[in-house]
Length: 437
Image 1 (tube, rainbow, N blue to C red):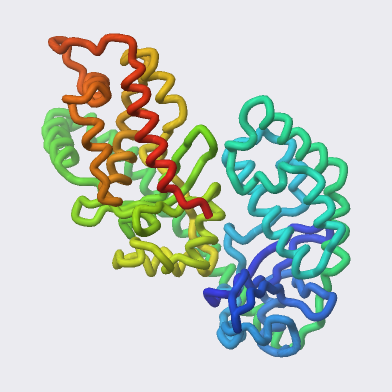
Image 2: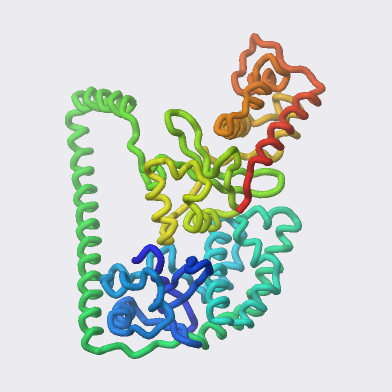
């Protein structure tokens, strides 16, 4: 797809349909957003073959003036197939809302509500806005799980679920009413249908080949096990050598983020959950942001959106050679932001643990928090963290005792008021660096 126009699938009462969406772009100093359609109609099609036939033959629609439109009619049918990240099951929303508000449920629901808001904005569906404005939980979805924790969070989720159960049909009916499937040129449709069928056949053949290969590997594995029983002594020696080689070998980077050398990170404070990016260049930390201010958002979706819209503005990471790869994926909507466990930093609650003493502090949580505070301070050219965590300081002594336990060392003694105050100061300084988008 064009980096600025995305193929999407909508699960509606009339069935699954595909159309095109142009996320917000700026032109002549104004911000625009559009879907494939004309006047009051949203054009949608039963499959990518019909969509391809339409875009190759029809010029009169709302996306014709989009700066990137010239690329779209040249795309193949497979290139017009919506990817998983742009598939929105609107019909399944009540089932989602009936589940527990975990990361996956809220993430999927947030994506659906975001596209529904865009549809309501572009198609001027006031009745949809009325439903989405009737429960505060709709607006809180982009912040992730944090707003839905605790007693108040449970109530927020319950109100949201009840609103969806009672009024979601109004949303579906309003969108269904504006969906229209235009006729397409039959000769062109025959061509695009053949393209789609050929692609599906190739995909099925490739999948079948993989299944066959897996089956052959399984058979070889069974044969290998029998052979191992016959040559137990020789195989044991070779196995020992292989294990030594495996221990020495470094694991290969896997996944997009490992390839670009930039990590999504998550920071949990007493106020909210924040998401940003960080990398190391010559062992020096670099954050998304500039001049000591770390750009953060309250959801991964909002982070991807920020990168797409302003990823190269006031951003030290833009100097990293692989940043263009990140920006390109954010722009075309394919940037998948997932945070690894060792890049999740929980600052909330540590001060209370420190107040109880070293035995109450989780060393893993503290170690990660210290890493984050040090990285942010180093990036900003601030020495206050390293000075406060020096072993000659009371806080530094306590942190050192927790992270590097030694039975011969004298344990810090209560009260720990000074240590708590010093820690809170470091955390507050860090939070002041956060530039929430």
